Length: 328
Image (cartoon, rainbow, N blue to C red; front, side, top):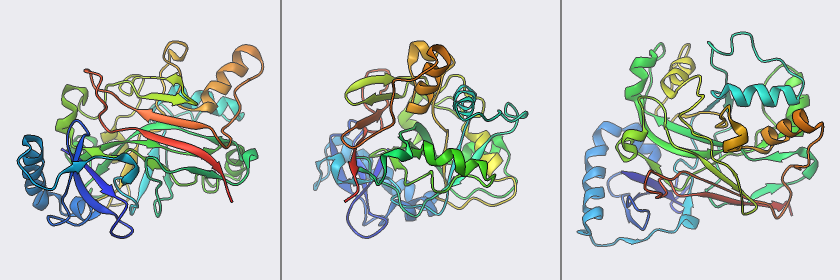
């Protein structure tokens, strides 16, 4: 089942069901008005949502219209909590080297996460507005999950059952703001503007065998200014899967239904073959190998597309497709 939120009906949008081939959508707001409310009462509303999704697939329901990703907000236009990890150590090592920081000594055993801003998310085709290009605008291609209520102290094994929906993320970063901010020793804030998510989120059954317990084993492709940038496999070189990240986040607190957990920038050790999922990683590789980089950060007019295809080459989540524009 694929779900999304139209950019109408208030801050939480309007819930729609989208066909598996992303060709049609049908309103589901009579079952439950928004995805936020759906995830908060998942066990109650899921059967009715699935029944309508089945009718949509059969073409046996009136009111279906063509699916247009430009009409979509992020699946959750806002959330009570957005927790992003750094689960790919190849990425962590490279970007920390770029800013002269050490990798934590327990990086391989203790997940690294931060709590991002979740009051506003960008839609999948919304422009990325930049006020100052010297801030070092970067995209970061990621996988993310949405959970139902997770109790404090939930184990990684128990956490598997709390993963209800999966989607893609562009965790937008301001690299030149990040460096001095992190030197203060108090974490991200100004360097992390609003993130964007894919047009739809999907239930685990939509992923078939590509969902392997707690990770999504498919390439995540980033296209930058119309050119292929990278397709690292989201299931490879992953030090912490989603159940591990959820258990870590829930060690000292409950996680409310609708909490989003991100994987961090998808990265593989064989980056020369599969490319990268952010500019910072490519820049660092170039500096290490050549002593300098010819890859600038994003500027107005630049575009990024983030998408994942299934084994048959069909888009699973639709594409995050954004353009950088200057602030007016």
